[in-house]
Image (cartoon, rainbow, N blue to C red; front, side, top):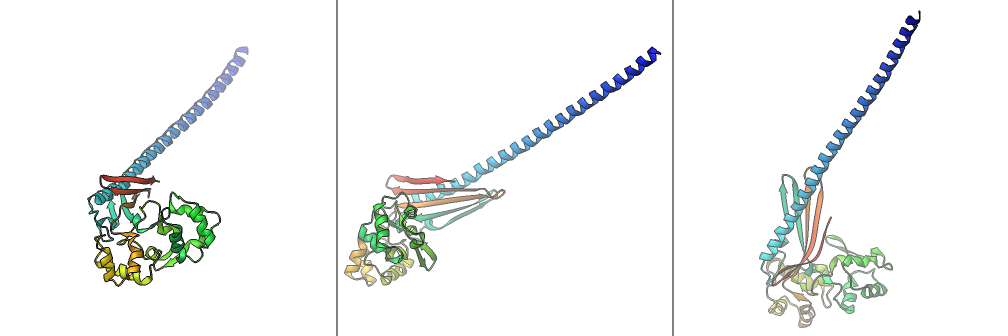
Length: 289
């Protein structure tokens, strides 16, 4: 009888041990499954990150390629005179299997240098912007020098709407017609109509005459500029006011190179301002996203 009872107890213990072992095995299997899934997930994430990183690097170098292409064009360009018909002024668009590149060049010598113009020239330049009052211009003048023209908007006392003017191409802000990088002279071949009107002694008649002339025949020689302006019907006084502020070539250019990847729409932008000198090109400003 005792043997029979002990046998039953042994069977119960054996079954209990097996149940515990089974539970442990199941937990171990579950844990291993979680580990395997976690490692697999991490591997997939790492692969995607590496792929994303590689695509970002490739997109960045595409943007850099655009920058280099324009720099080569500027280095090879005839610096005697510059016009909107030059090769550097045309937007570069390049499509590749892995992305699209677009590069735009802006001639900084087509804008007024806010740090170099006199107070009288600033007052005259602002006449196109009816919202700007004398106290606004005083605040702008006293806040110089600016690193970039858009810093004008940071002057607390000036309402942003005061900077707006409507043109044939849409709304333009005052600081969009300014620069901080040029030598203070305007390239008569590239300067905008609005900036020409901001020059003391200028008028719409003068502006229209200059723009009509340069569409087909750019001004090429600084020494003969007075004679050429005279042939357009400008008076000696008008020529005198204009000639001291203009030139026929440009030395400072803003290059904005943007590349967008074809797979994930990753965007990389490189923007630089370079100065063309006799011994090469000098970087004045650079940023990238």
